[in-house]
Each structure stands twice: as structure tokens, then as C-alpha cells.
Length: 253
Image (tube, rainbow, N blue to C red; front, side, top):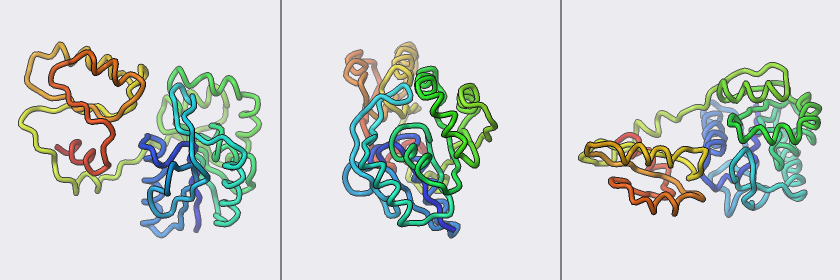
């Protein structure tokens, strides 16, 4: 069996959707399913089995800013990659986000599974803007899934139909094999983009009120990084972007 997984965001950049796409592809290969990931990259593909459709620019999407490629060339490369690989089915993550997934949704006649991740208030705008088109295009989906109850509710509100909740997977082996990061005090870790909807500012407010010895590890970056660093909250280590290996070690530690 051959499966193609489509991602609208740069596979070279850490992110929730990208991590799920790459992790699912690895898991499918482990059970003997011939799997390819099709999506944009910034530089060489990050791992084997990834087919790049071109570089990205940062654009507003799903209430945030995401690295995307919405150009016609990327859409053409997406459909060509599907024809060349000739999969039995497509798995589209965020099917209505402009770019490779949307191109595959309307440009291929293969069976399609659509997985919806969007769940926040800021993400309502996308559904409202493209609702009429999305309602028609959603008929192309053979199976509709959502990664959470909130994502399911948002998708059902604007698209109707039936959605199955399939939560994101976790690569347990990655963490069980990791070496714990040494620390002599309790540690809390924040992972995500530094923007209002992720809540890092609220976490720092709470952290500044804690009267005990501990360390807050902050992973990632974003538009609020400099502003939040300037608060000079004690016992905070700003780590920036780190490797998957270091992340696993800190989570295990």
C-alpha cells in the first residue's frame, strides 16, 4: 500500500502539524506502508521520504504566522508528485489551508483523509472566508478527522458533516531512549511560538509570583520574544530553537 501525506507548512520548521506529519510517515513505514510526505521545505528535505514542492514565505494562517507556499508552481509540483508516486490514498493535513493540501484536495481524484488541527478563536476567520468554497470542496474528503474535540467542534460548525476525533500521536521511543537533562531543581518547560495565543506571557506572570527554587525552560521564538525577555523574570532560561534530541532530553529530565 502507498500513502501520500500532504502538509501545507514548511517541513524544515518545527511545528505541531509538521511534527505530526513526519512522525506519522515514520510510523507507517515501520509497519510496511510505502509513505511519502509532500510539502514545502526551506532547503533540502529534512529526512528521507519527503518530496519538496518549493520554499516558503511567512504568512498569516490559522490565527498565527506560518511558513507556507501558496504559489501555482508549488500546486503544480504537488499534483506532479502525486502522479509520480501514484499512491492508493492521500492524507491531507489542514485541507483548506492554501498550498499543497488544498491543491491535492481539488486536483486529485484519489480517496482522501482530511485531518483538521485548527481549534482557536483566531482560526474562525479562515473558515468564514472560504466557507462556500470549503463546503463544496469538503465533499472530496472520504474520511474527516480532527485532532481534538475543539478542532472537531470548529470544523463541524462551519462545514457540517461527521468528524472522528483522532488525537495527535507521540513517539514514545524517542523519549524513552533519551538521556535526561541534568538539573538540580524542579524544571518547567514551555514549547511553542512566542505569541499571545500561546500564553507564554501569562506563564511568565505566574512564574514571577512563585516563591520557590525552580527553572523555567522556554523553547522556541516568535514576535513576542524580545518583549518577554525584557521583563527579566528570574530563573528563566531562553533556549530558542533546539533539536528534537535536546527537546526529548529536557522533557525526560
